Image (cartoon, rainbow, N blue to C red; front, side):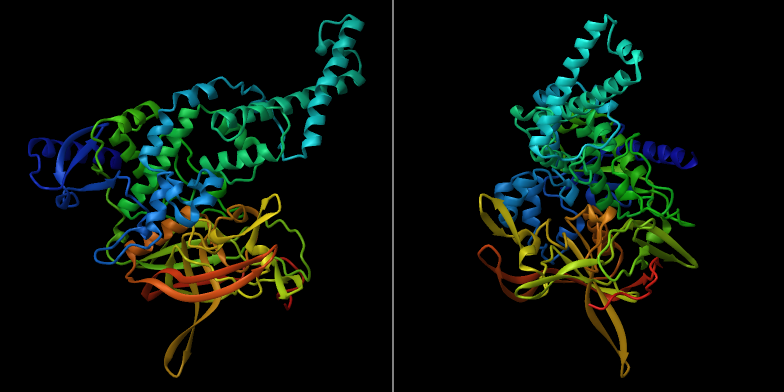
Amino acid sequence: MRLVAAVIVVQAFLIAVAAAAPAACEDELPVFADGAARGSVCRPDADAAGLTIIDLSASWTPGVLAADGPAAAPAYRDVYLALAAERYEDAGADRAVATRDGYLEIYGILPTLEVLRARLADSARHRCHDQVDDGALTALDRVVVEEPAREGRARVRQARSLRAQLERQVAKREVADLDALAASSAYYRRRVDRLRALETRVAAVIALQGHLVCDGLLEARRVDGAYTWRSSNALEAWQRRHMLVPDGRLGEEVGALMTEDSRELDFRSALRVLRERVIDATGLVEDGSAGTGPRPVLGRTLDPAAASQVRGHEPLPDAAPDLIGPATEAVADALGWTGPAETRRFLERAGLPAAVAVPLPPAPAYHAGALDLEVEIDRGDVWYDTRPRSRRADRRPALTLYARDGERRIPLVRWPTTIGGWQDEKVDDDLVESRWKESPVGARVWRSMYVAPAWLPPASTPDADLVRSLGGGAYELKRDTLGPSYRSAYGLVMLVHALPSERRGETRYLDEGIRTHGTASVRSLATGTSHGCHRLFPHHALRLGGFLLRHVDHVRVGESETWYRRTVRHHGRHRVEIDSRGYRIDFPQPIPVDVLEGTIRSRRMTPARS
């Protein structure tokens, strides 16, 4: 409470000063509080005045994609800006895959404020959602998964047939309704229960399909109650739009979110967009994930549990609290983004500023100067089975970022990650078999970070993994997986794990092929494995990269040349040519990374030999 009171006093003081003595300068920024401009400040004077500058322009990108003084920005920046504006025709090699994906926030591509304005102002779409009957979505008590079209249509027919049969029995037995029929015998009770389960499922699917039609993700003629691949694919796009792990499953999480007002869902998207700009402006990374979890923003939970919780891990002692949530809420309050209508009014105002200054609480003292950072990767539960086998890890892998502050070791964040497991590998031209891919244990360092990296598939990567079917017998090379792309195997940020060794008084570094990186395979972060690398949610990888650039000494090397050539032979011949590994940034003082063994749950204590 004392902190809140202090902030209020500071706000009042700054607003009064700004109003009494408006700044006279070329780059003048409005100072916002309580939803209105309360004066102005010169950009160079904002920091000294205790104000934080929030970039609201259409040219904003996460920090890793921004230029830094004379250093050029990564080449992928222009593609990011096109994707954020949903100008997919200008997205170069990402054009086709972005068009198929539809919505890209789950991959770290934040929509621009103009895109948000258009969504909030789309009255026809909102009216369409309002007209969908959501009753069955709230009543659904089981998960609906994709089914073959024949089975789905049969289920719908079965529900209709069973209702007709039972209604005939109601008339024949001269009882009041189905409830009375169910009370007449155990047989009819089971039949009525079966009917209601069927009808609830069908009605829930129809409601889901109705919402998907409203968002232009499904044709109206597909609203039939059968949950086939068309509905599942459309739901995955809807999940991507609302920052859910896209699995195409209609369960409690999807059902609860889909029953929310569509304007409210657009508002939550706006808050997430604002949050990433606040993170970039403040240099914060502390999201509460290392402790008791994130705080709601204006009473809203903005992320799925899978992104902020790691199964089997308790809060860490002395963990940093969520600083991002309160800062985002403070900026939202200052701008007047307190609800969908208020946010729409702000975005539709004439002369929308490209940047604003707002008063925020100061960053923690340990943020001053270069930070002494270290990373710990807990591999969680590990099974060294001699052959592939499905396992459920009660303790999932986790990456924790620490900051040293004197004698304190402060856990800043703890995010879900992955470790290796059984993966298909190419043994020779005609043979592919499962091999164990290990995540090596022990001390490593991060010496280099690549922005918009390319993946150079090793010779062991099966050709089939590098090609996708387009239907109708057509196939294409997965150029987006190779990168640079938001769908690259490495996402938009990759940190190389290097094994240091001393030889003749000189430290040398071995690249074992292990990385910490973003990923388009976000489902693997909840249940899956990798080829040995430590994957992160795309927005976590972008935040981590930006945080390192803000708080660690670094050297921008620029686009890193390479020469990779390969002919992929699978449903034709596909030529791979990669000339850049991505935009390289080096850390003169390497960041220590400790990969913990985890808990070996199998009898075998070492991995199977590949």
